[in-house]
Length: 405
Image (cartoon, rainbow, N blue to C red; front, side, top):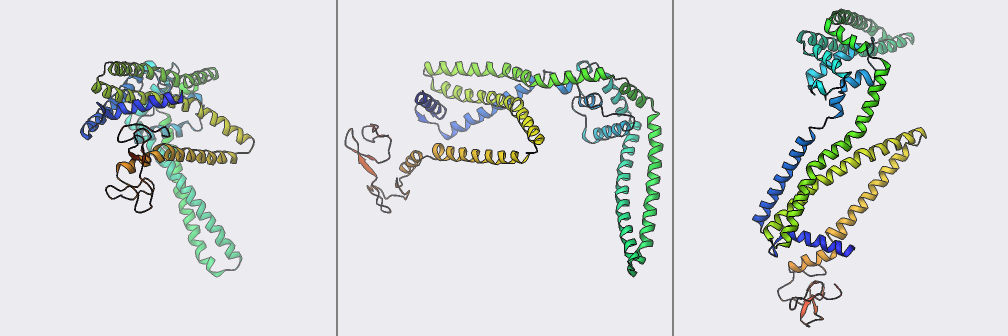
């Protein structure tokens, strides 16, 4: 079984790189590579257009709705700040994910919430008020941080004064004045923010949004959480189904064309169909890998990390990462050394380039032994007794493959 698989893979590789039992010319190779890239790009573009028809969890329950309903972090104490952050983030970075989805596709609980938010966001004057309030909040945070630093400096100088250090008296008054100025500036900002917040909260659009938020019951929150969990669980499988519905017919068509071309001995069609078969298989393998990575490893890793945290053994995770890196390096070295740069491949390259099969030095024409290391370059063919390369796979005279190869 392994030998048959290896032989099949070898024959398929030859169909990709040879035409009429001859190596592909560089020009033909360039053309076939460009065709591969074009078809691969077209497949991924068609795949994106096809899967766009599938409703994503973000379209059904937008992040804005999750933030308000599922996470339940909006309350009278923070909702104005959160609304200002949302509107400011939209003005800088654009739409939150899922906000542009058609209102008809949204959950019945989310649609009016998103609509009420958009009414606030799309009013230019109200949006500017919210942005100004967010800017005031940033200025207040900066002032409070600076005031804390001034207070620390004042306390230090006061201790130096108590310790009878003359230089402390010189700076105490300046620090006291700076602290008073910052306190006055902070009080001014607080008053500006209070007045601006009062104006914003009196706006009917903001009050309508608050009314929507306050009207959500705990039962509705629980139902939305359950639906969101179900959507997130099934969406990867549904997405894979949509992707396979697009990819498998293409893969089947190219496989059928390739099989028929081989049976009918059509070398040009065999070459092209073999390449397209590989191209069509690439997205299938990638999408299956994405599903496996999305469903299995992420959940397992999350559970593993939670378990290690509960046992206070998080350091074991670092050991596992180091072990995985070592195993991956060993596997890569094995593939590079045994498969891509094996001794057999090295010998064939040296023979083709006229180099010594043992040391790799260039040989003068007609050399039977290497002048650098003395290694014999030829042996007698067991079939016809003519000279053949020591590490050659076939005899140059009769084409016989020695049993030792």
